[in-house]
Length: 193
Image (tube, rainbow, N blue to C red; front, side, top):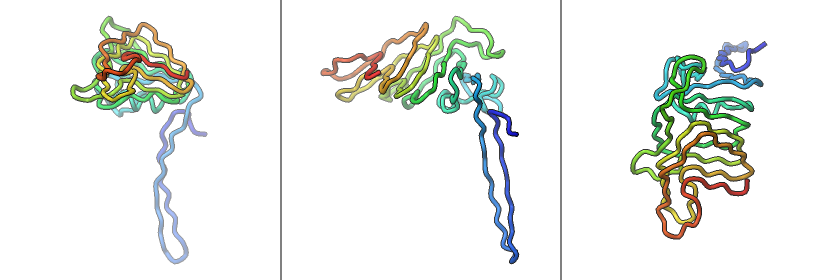
């Protein structure tokens, strides 16, 4: 039987009676039904599979893609993570994104240092976006989101479509909407949840 949450790589070779040969490779990733921990430091490490600080992902997007089970937790090392595009939290089944970790242990100790998600200067993005999702953000700072189009809302966090969002010990600050006619929140906007 295949082990849960394991990557398998298969190579097949076949030939027919006239010596025509075909070969191909297939990759399989098995899913776990038990919540798993995933690790994100300031830069990736090791084999980048997110299973420990030694083999951590190179960024939050890949860790979020691999959150398939309710209770999956992404442990994020303290530091500032500058984004070129929105961090998509859509369709998560109950993931937890927890910041402030020192980057050692399993998951290890938390520090008093913040885990900050912000934007690259001269990029106009919202930091987090989610639709039809269930997610908890814990000890995360969301700052510097900036939007410029009419009817833009939620430069820091924007959730729609029956989402369930929990913010625990989070700081949402210095997010801006650079238009005069917007009436809604620059830091956080939740619609139809």
